[in-house]
Length: 294
Image 1 (cartoon, helix red, strand yellow):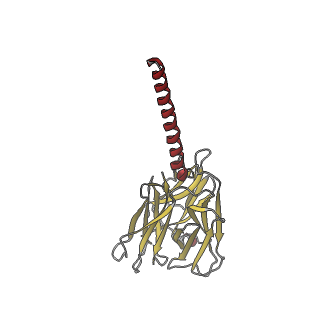
Image 2 (cartoon, rainbow, N blue to C red):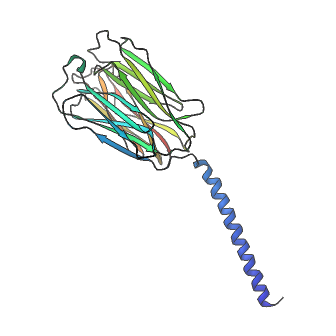
């Protein structure tokens, strides 16, 4: 074999070796990518705010075209302890929030100016998403709980809640996500509703394809609160992105309501505030964030 032929064979061997290495690397990358094949690309948060005034008010926010709602957030600004978030309701492409001043049912309310903000976690999860909801009985009981389950084989991405008939005299004191359901609870304030009927509805945003690394993280506030009118904390995703939120006001007794449920890229900040005449109980707030691989 002459030198020229040997060189040709050497080049060919190197080319074959490189091709094999590329094929093996590609195969390896495919295997590594499989666990992330059900992630949530293009995640973003969108927000809308009302103006400042002293009226009961609501607002909607819509995801960018083609993106679906994964989770919700809301925030009250001004009139601390004098306004209650009455609903944060997800649909496939939008989120609606509404807030009443305490005592709206009795036309007392507050003269303070305040605003309401609402957020939607938006993204493109692989596979279908559905919004499951369940409502409690409508009656004059002073507290109610209800759980919205996901369909079999679906996983929770986010949560929501809605009061009906309460008009500022009932607080949503828990909106707790679990792997396949969302539990919502509410309790009348110390004034109550004079035997009027009201009900609570729970919402679960459910995904057909489980996002990689899906988990629920919670964190407690600094309570029990005995000498302050508010408690704030945050739940943080460990190296992952936030998809949805939740909260639990522990031992609030209807005299402490949620004021902030604010999403970030990997965090949910939660603040609860005592109502205008305070709360003699020891209480604290717990924040929840639903996480998946970035």
